[in-house]
Amino acid sequence: MKYTPKAPPPGINHNVGTKSLFGDFVKLIVGAVFSCLVLYTSVVLVMRLSLSLFEGPTLSVLAPMMQAPFLAAHANLSSKQERLQHRLERILHKLQRSLPKDTQKYTVVLVPDEETNAYAIPGGLIVFLSPLAEKAKSEEELAFVMAHELGHFAHRDHLTGLSNVAAMALLAPLGMVSEDFSRIMALTSQLSFLHHSRVQETQADVFGLTLLHEAYGSVAKGGDFLQRMEMERKGGLKLSFLSSHPVTRQRIAELQDLALKKEYSGAREFLTVRNED
Amino acid sequence: MFEIGTLLFFLVIGYGVGTYTERKHYQAIEERERNSIHLPTVTFGKRHVGDDRIHETQCVSGSVVISIDYFKRFVAGLQNIFGGTVTAYETLVDRARREAVLRMKESANGATTIVNTRIETATIGQSAGKKSAITCVEAFAYGTAIWENEKTGRS
Image (cartoon, rainbow over all chains, first blue to last red):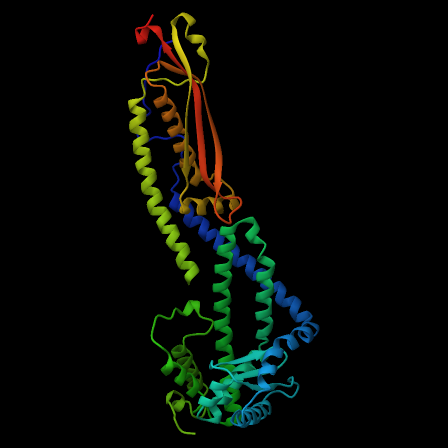
């Protein structure tokens, strides 16, 4: 048998496909993100439906657990904070008069803290952290924040929050199948949740502005909290798609547009920053 | 944001460095294959070489372990979900086998033929925290090198 050396043609390798690896990468990423979005959205919708069917029993168990730390912190108020607490209760009472009669009963508590924020806790509890109440220059400013939190209750946003938590727990075992797919799922679901959160915040803003106008007859001082938040914001890059709230400037602009469109009293003063009591 | 950033960072590094390393390796493989083309490696036995012509025989082998870059590992992980040809591993296995054969040939210095050539491939090594991800491939090529009397000039 004679052996004749023969090199294969250059540039040809029958053991390696001709498809572009980068092209495969793009197709797989698009497919994975789409699959994750469909899966995550489906699971969240199912969880939300389930929770809404069993909202009463679910909240009767979860609400006390979620409210407990805030109620415990609320127990230790200074005399100045006690006066702020009474102020908040008067504002809540005024706002509730403008809500439908069959609305659930709400409670507001002032909690000493270092952060400036307010929360709507399942079970009808509105939490004001002390710096927010102390920095407010007008009753309408506090009323807008409170009306915003009431908007979260009106839209049952707490169910969406619980649905998201339950969905992530259900999807966690994906990590055992594929860590890369699980990582894409985590990123996709987080971005999806943040987008939905921004939509909820915008809807709560609209509700808050409308309720403020109904209860107080003017929205002139309603934007003061957002204006102050924008002025106190430290510089730096803020990527809106990574935030649970819309960019403050955008919030203010949209609220003023709404106020002008609905011809609310005080709409033109909405953007003016006030420092008076 | 941090998680997206680190993922993108490793993907870019993996793609860039991995593609460069692979291209350089293929260039080296092709050059060494041209230089060793005179030494045939066949899968059949020595029946075509008469006993009177054989001066010496020796079992020769060559092995290599090649790792996959992060970009290819990521793509292969997704391809394992959706199915189809795992193109990310094709070049890895191809390079490993060809490199193992070349090392086997280099260990048979001056041989006339290498018969009964076999190649075995195995996966070794695990990425931290990833139980099923392939990170390294070992290729092992072995055969019997024959030195013939006529070609070596020995009696």
